[in-house]
Image 1 (tube, rainbow, N blue to C red):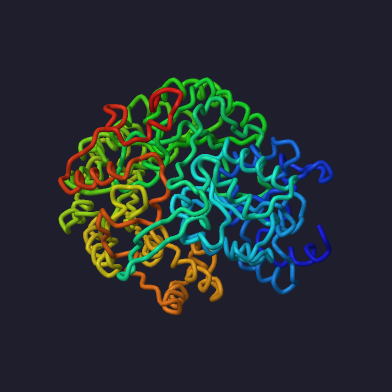
Image 2 (image 1 turned 45 degrees about the vertical axis):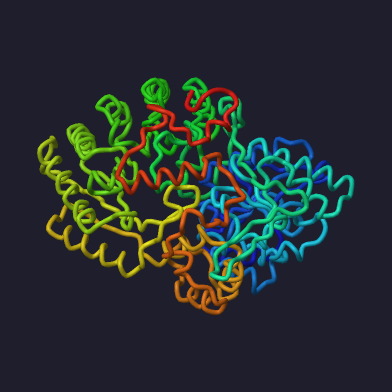
Length: 612
């Protein structure tokens, strides 16, 4: 660490975010390295170090001979102020070298509201924002993660995008870069060659043309680029790399525990859920693999809590067997086992007994809507009876609090649907009174509502988002309904952030100048209340002459060309359109385990059928 850094660290919050030196960080001899990758997470250290994907790919790249992957995170505002005032560029934690010294700069992007952080980190690094301004093979900037299924708002800033799961693809990308560097290719040749790798999308090789009404009229591949780029998946999770000797953070992080990934994908098909469609097909690890990985992680890190991670943990086929095996190991060592992402339709007394053997962790259910009609419309496949039965099981087992998640503004939602949320919560409260073993202790029912955001590659990708004022009216209606029950805590997502999320999620390349202008105005760290500034965003849109409502509150016809139509997640667009029709008829589609409905994702899986 240089003296300048030593002087500024006492001036900032949580200096451990910036110094590295953690147990299990990977340091290599620079003389034995020919490719250096700065793995950048566009949020703070405590968020990035909680991300499973970043930990996996950090290990994948560092397992490659001659490759050194180091980490960089977005600084908090106080550190950025010190960096700018002392002319200190953004650095990587392992070597403390500036990010601008690295061959490749990779971003993991899982949240649209981190887009400005990407630009700000490049700016702090002294790296030109626009891909067209970065010549040669030095500072190749690429990105992966869920948001890259529509990378168009970031298209001018990225050299290429990695689509889907990166365990195999990242190795192919880095090896191709190594060859390009050795053979001294120019940048255009490298981009043409990397575009040939399945799962790589190069924005500069696609021309977007617009109609007079402002809609996208055509996407034209250039220079031999494929018409459609399909995401990559890992075929066998048991054989895939998983970091069991992972970095132990030197300071507290958001998820300061072991995350044990059970499976990828989801069998359910909730029509609002981007992850449920983009992560298909379902692929699971065996209990034997998971128990082995859990033991290795505990023994190496010393952590005392294991979280079973997936989109729907209770849908893991062999969960009772896995829980028994983990509890045999965890109980004598007083290690807590928590199961988030539980389904109300398969939460059993047997499962409850297992999860409370070490320590009761919080219970969370997500009915999403108050009426059965709307739950059927969104394909939630859960009934009121199942929600209440699960709550009864929990309350009888000694739980005295439950969290319930809902959405407001879902397609076809009415005032009756909104008020039905309060009715359902009231029934949960009565369920507690009838089933609790200790009324004197009381009950806390935490209710949270999110503002529906239409996302790409879902049946609702064509839908309009509610105007903010209509969303606020529905929130107020629900708040009034909850006032009569003091056992209910209600919080809701503010509409401003969700409105911007909708714009960025479905935006095209004309959003890029808005992002650049927003950063110029000082926008950053939008996921944090301390920094989110909606007025600056509105100014950026006004300065660039871009209408938010065109992207957020405009319903799109199914025949409209969408910015992400050159990308495929394996699920056919025709299937999504048919699911949208099912939604308006309030008809459910069975889950993948009950019946395959031919979405197309199974064709990506070459080693068997989904969920086998």
